Length: 97
Image 1: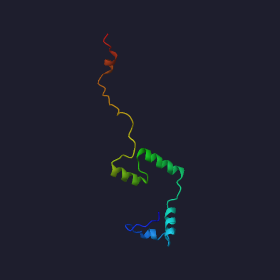
Image 2 (image 1 turned 120 degrees about the horizontal axis):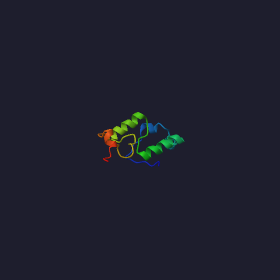
Image 3 (image 1 turned 90 degrees about the horizontal axis):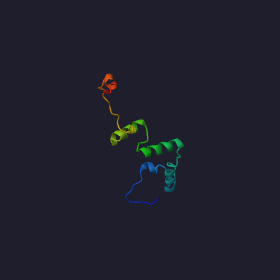
């Protein structure tokens, strides 16, 4: 960290973080030191386990559309077969005796 690379150029917003290089690095690190509460951590864990996006409803919908991955879990198990009743009540009581 703090090494220079001639291929990289510092962005104006990064330079605005401080006058000295060390002050900029410290200010940049502080941007990411926010602690998450337990609810946010839980939401992230669930989303990771289910392969779902985290964010606003609009963002999640856009990610779902873009990726082709549905946002809700599919109902488990086989689809229910529709049974068409063709037998009459008399057919059910006549055992052929």
